Image (spheres, rainbow, N blue to C red):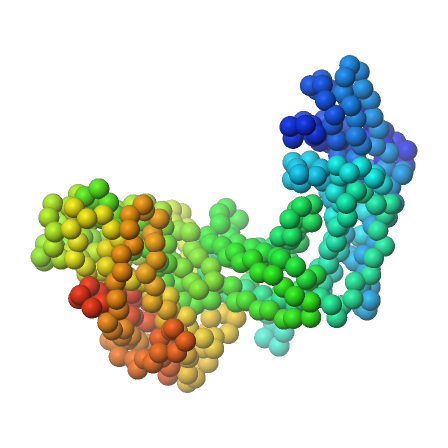
Length: 481
């Protein structure tokens, strides 16, 4: 295998050889030989020049039987040019990918240049696919000194590998996605945002990094119509704390928006189950928001019956609490969760730093089922990008009552809601004031009159027609400031 860069020098580029019969792949290096099973292969490679910003992708088909040789020569590469019909002009970051049909990821070679110097060696083979992407971005700050990133992201694909690309996209035909990544309820100091193309095939291997910095940010992205996935992770230098994922199909000329990591982070839908005469509760969803979640924390879980504590145990994120049940009756399960992790320190202003779930239910060890319980998604609206409300303002809070499967292979029987109540505290849960609720579009809604400073905590209780109840408390659900 010989690989030659655009200056004519032989280089040791990394090469992937894909067997067209079985899809098996082998890693090769330009300038070196390697033994492969007999068969027909597609070899794909990315050739980078020493001391240059140029990158070239190329591919060849070669039949291996005895001694075989092939060459990818970057000097035959043609430029990949992507532009818009109005400013900001030629793309600052260009990506080009060659894929083996049906083996888009394993047989892929890609070139990326932040200065647009990308080339492709043409090849008309029906076994090859080609995809390309142009990315522009401009950073600025708003009136409150918070980051705003305006981007354009366009992509296209072909069968076979063309003799270069020179395409202009109309800005008016793009979709617009506004992504507001909030702070306050997340613990890591860095948010990493990626937009993945979900079109499938070689085009589906493309993605763009939109953000990888500290603080809240608004991302305004003009993007080619199609299916895209927003992926945001909240992280520190040593670990990931949480994530957000959403895939949507965006149409030409239309606008879309999403708020990532909004308040409040509450227990995320897990309810206890009876399974093989054991009561089980999984602590894998202690802190979830309507759009994002936290992947750690610890909870003190306590099970009671008839006023007696049957078991009390501290369980970390993702662990299971279980108890061997002896008899049917009314049980109480309390899950008191805090944002904790070994060796971690958290800001004193962290929102949703503690949640409590309280379940009171009738259960029979001889009957496998999800117990008659509910969870509540708590969504305060009218907050800013730091999950903060204006002093003296009114915040609309939406409550969504849910009863969903917790992942255990036991039935999810019906439990009919009889009543929903909510309470508000402005003194960290020392006192609670009952809120007025109304039903709107399948949600329960209340309006909270905010104080001049501090934090608002929220509490809900759902009771079914048989007396089973589920209570959710979120301390410091959002901030006033």
